[in-house]
Amino acid sequence: MSCFNVDIFHLFEECFFVLGKVVIKVKIIIQKYGGTSMADANCIRNVAMKVIKEKRRGKAVIVVVSAQAGITDMLNEKAKEISSNPSKRELDMMLATGEQVSISLLAMAIHEMGEKGVSYTAQQVGIITDENYTNARIKNINSKKIMNELKDGKIVILPGFQGTTKNDEITNLGRGGSDTSAVAIGVAVNAEEVEIYTDVTGVYSADPRIVKNARKIDFISYDEMLEMAGSGAKVLHYRSVELAAKNNIKIHLRSSFDNSVGTIVKKEDKLMENPEIRGVAHSMNKAKITIGNIEDKSNNLTYIFNEIAKAKINVDIITQNQVGNNKICVSYIVDEEDYENAFKISEKFKDKFIGSYVKGNKDIAKISVIGIGMKSTYGVAAKVFSALADENIDIDMVSTSSINISCIVKKDDYMKALNIIHIKLLEE
Ligand code: ADP
Ligand code: ASP
Ligand code: MG
Image 1: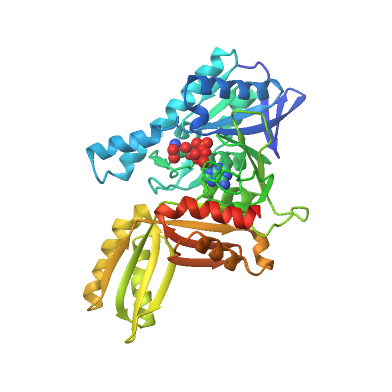
Image 2: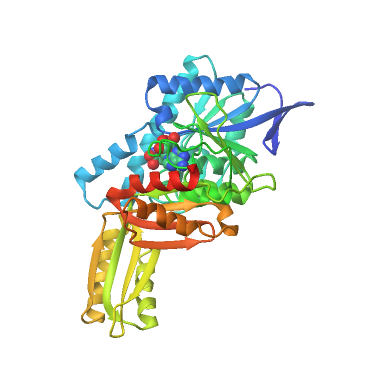
């Protein structure tokens, strides 16, 4: 305990520790490390060294960590061995342990290196969410405890992904949610930037593990990053970008395995060039449902999608085809995890729409081409379709917005599709 009457206040990424009459200005930094960055003891030591380096440069450091690589999947598998439909509350109870192991291991590694570090669970520090188990949203973060520990010269280690309700229930933010935890903590302490460390050196024009010539992007606007993340580029959790945009916090996405400068995600500014295409993303966890041979009445569509909405299922692309005789066929895309439920609901319509049928297809992938520059360029869709045609890839469905063209293709074709679009639209 300090013998001074210590007070703290913080303002724009800086924290002022008041010791008697002396005000000490310290810059707060937030670093998030993902599962591969925390994969084993050596990786954890590497994280500890990086964090300590910042601390010794005179910064106040908050670290947010994910469960070690593979742990969340492994825990989910364990649940499946017991139940095909486990309670969401119990799932969150179990999955939260993954991040809890990581925070304590990192604290131990920091202690071994002679620094002061302290880990806290979401509940202990007050990362308050709603009650939506497995996909909770952060409502508030109490920064008091964090600031007190920083003031004491400690590195504060917090779990990503994890939350707690106001009734002390354990919740999780959804897969990949640690990025969102880091940005939310950044908002809580008024940070200007959050560093997200991962296993690639930045955001690329396509997943660099699939597209050999994918290029690193130095700066990307929130809008484009939202579109990339929303279209399946899991390098950043969609909601982390949403939150960063809303609060105008920069995200610096970079590698935990080298010191290179990564990608800055920030507000679009006049100096940022807007290429026609910024990148290509893919999503493998989509499924398609078709309800065929229903009467062509506009309130039939309302009826179908009202029922789907009531089940809280998000619908992606919707198409409607005329199939003669005043009959239509409606197809829609949902996330794979909602497929069984959406299929069951759609089957119920067979009683209402006599003579109709329902078909499902999980053998699909969504390929999305993204770029703000598309707004002011014509012919991008034609280039995408022609690239796919060159490789004999069939397009099942298409959707477009001013900065996104998405195509549904067969799952087996996704790699070929990504690569040919990248070559024709980004390399030539
Ligand atoms: P972490 O465990 O650090 O959160 P993730 O596995 O969630 O890491 O995200 C990093 C991965 O995102 C990379 O290994 C890469 O395969 C994938 N990825 C997908 N699209 C892109 C992209 N456009 N740029 C960079 N990485 C991407
Ligand atoms: N551990 C969680 C997951 O694997 C959260 C995260 O890593 O962001 O999805
Ligand atoms: Mg991630």
